[in-house]
Length: 117
Length: 115
Image (tube, rainbow over all chains, first blue to last red; front, top):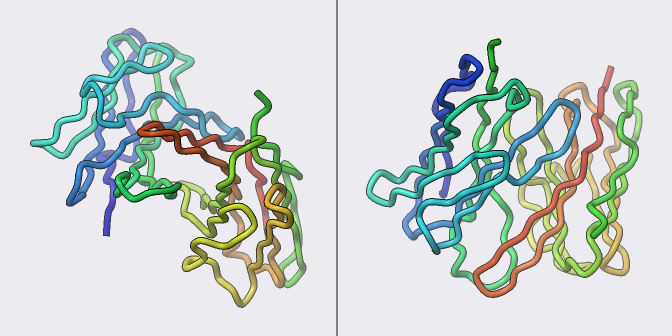
């Protein structure tokens, strides 16, 4: 079964410090990968996605992620954390995007990011 | 473009009662999903519709959960009778596929508390 693993259920960084949220996937074929952010009592908002084009993907709010096939990783980074980045972050995968038609996203368990002033 | 609409936003019920959630997807999105998100976990797929047909309901607890998507647009998810462990956020999403581009849009969710 395809899956995605987020290392660290809680990450805490100081304001202005580098943000690194880890995501590894297991897949027999190159998947499509997504990062979502969820603020309290809100739905999921797409940060960025990798769909087999450039391996370095830039998203909203200064976030970016790099697809590394050799490491089966898709870590999310931001050079300088802001207080408003405090939220829950989810990595998600489309296990086999080469099947025709829509297929549901499979989510990791999430990483809660805290930003300390 | 209007987003995915869900209602109600919050619901508190007693165990063994019934509850229903409503979702209106983005216009033109043929595929609709219901996810369950338990506190501290990632969303888990309950059911996927393609137009008004069920594609995957393998993780839907069919003894108490039911869902329908009449006319291939709006959808309702029902729980009857509810259990304490059903307390969660229920997210609706719709999606499109265009070539290699996949787009998923999530609603704000319905937070269910079963007491």
